[in-house]
Length: 231
Image (cartoon, rainbow, N blue to C red; front, side):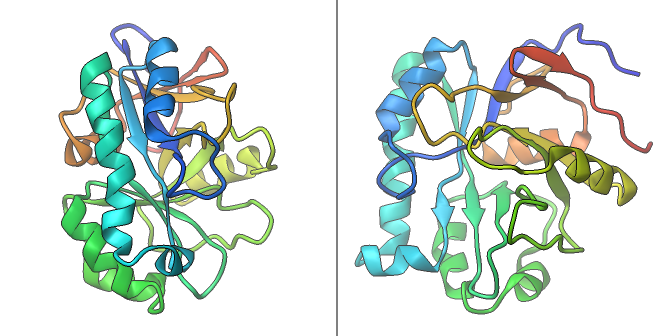
């Protein structure tokens, strides 16, 4: 079993900014400042990337990336390393998928897959660099989907019942990569669910590698949790 020694870097895997995520209250610079004040070293912007984005912008990919670019500039100023992620949804149902190990080119390409669904996405996009993790798979209206790399077992959004206990059992039973995140949307909820690592990944691809290694701990509500999984 691991102990907490050496896991000194705090990383957020699941955070939203406004205006790209309509359900979020705070623009990119404000989100980064809140996480800097909380002592977080790495922050992943996982805005909603779904069909509802298309009617809101002439160029949905550019609109999506604008929030991240602004956050990255603020991160450089405040010493918070920023990672590009996404909370991806298709037209077929209400499932959400957190994706890491991506770049702007991925964002532009994946928009064409909104109508094609998760199975087609997995067939065309699976590779050794990216990672797809089903977000809060047991929240109301969600259906656990086989074939993903992992599952979010601790979603700390205080306004939703994500049934984290059931998600933990599910991930362990299927040997899925476990993930935790705040699912940050609103002021005062920042840094509730963090990942602790021994080193700080350089970029989104390095973040995917970290998760794939399973060499990390969770910091939930300020308390360290050592995940256990099948070896």
